[in-house]
Length: 317
Ligand SMILES: C[S@@+](CC[C@H](N)C(=O)[O-])C[C@H]1O[C@@H](n2cnc3c(N)ncnc32)[C@H](O)[C@@H]1O
Image 1 (cartoon, rainbow, N blue to C red):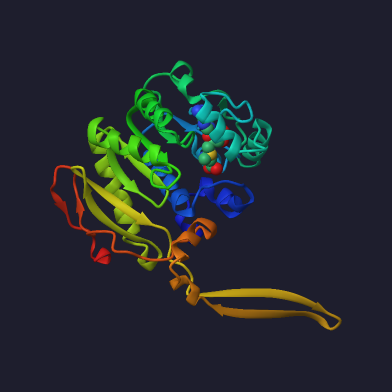
Image 2 (image 1 turned 135 degrees about the vertical axis):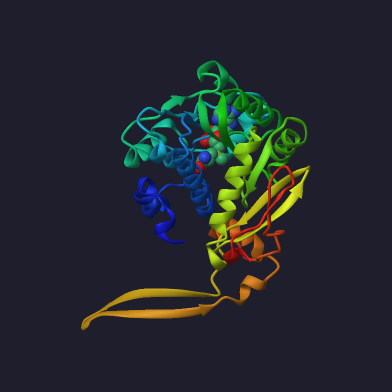
């Protein structure tokens, strides 16, 4: 993925992103970057929230985008593991070694202004954040159904009219609670999908914001050639844009510098990758942050939420 795709405020972090531990795929880096830039360009203002910061991998990108008058707010229990028994077990097992200092040390490497840290359970967020004050919320805390349901309802009340919400892990084996809570909000609580990636669901409670954001993203992916696979499907009455990460390599190139008494010799080994056809290959995407297969994802014809067709530029077809 090319650096030209990244907005100037995030380019330094993009180049160095791999030095931060966390689960934040490149495709989501790009989508966050585009949505936050689009909000800036259309004059949308508000604070930026992340529930579940871990070591800061995604929160740092919010920090890169916050304007001087905007706050980045992060909510995480860090090592003060509390909550109900299941949430305690989830956090103890999943995030051993986490503490607030490690998050803050990472964050300040790329962002000068410290975030507002709410180091407690996300259920308290509505008492700490002004109603309707956010333009962007990334919900990436607990994966348990009851907590996620509450996070969605709380986020709705603190997002402003133009706000966008991103839900992490809405479709993994270990996160059925996120899936159920997200699609329940779509079916029954007016949450409108903008797009989905391998890991994240993007939505808004404002149908016009959802429609325009989805259309802008579709126009962008349509210019990316083979690098991004995408399509549109109708789900529960809404048109959802599906965006898949860059296609995998067909060959893997290993380059090594070998010091010898006569100088450095460059050794290049090209390894074909037939193993990507192996039935287990799709699982490797979680290890390598790459999609392995390119399924048909749906029509490439954008539809407004009202059902009116919007033909895409020629390059998309
Ligand atoms: C999946 S990680 C977040 C990943 C992170 N966004 C990144 O980019 O790497 C989930 C985080 O949520 C926090 N967490 C879990 N349950 C929580 C709760 N009920 N309230 C607040 N934070 C919670 C954990 O401590 C952990 O740091």
